[in-house]
Image (cartoon, rainbow, N blue to C red; front, side):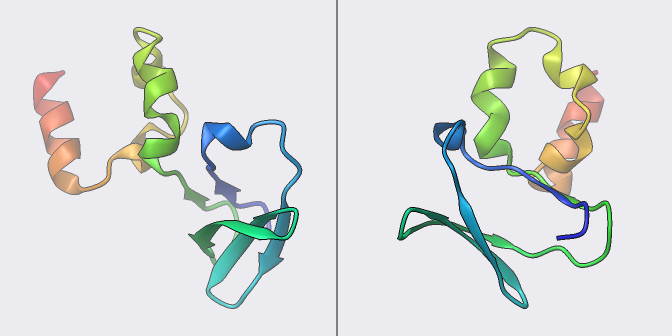
Length: 88
C-alpha cells in the first residue's frame, strides 16, 4: 500500500478492519466477513477516493468541497469536472 490513500464508507469509522493485500485488489474485512474490495494502487502517494463515501459530509458543510484536499479525485468522470469548472 506504500503510503497510498483510500476512502471507505463512513459506516466504517471506528471499526477495526483487516486488510488483505492482493496483487490487484485490497480486501477489507470486519471480523470474518468481506466488507469492501478496492482496487490496489501501485506506486507511492496515490489516492483512490470514491465520492460516494464522502459526498454527504461535504454537502452539509458549505464551501468544504472547494477546499477539500482530494477534490480532483472526487470527480467520477471528466464530464463532472468540466461541469464543475464551468459553474465556478
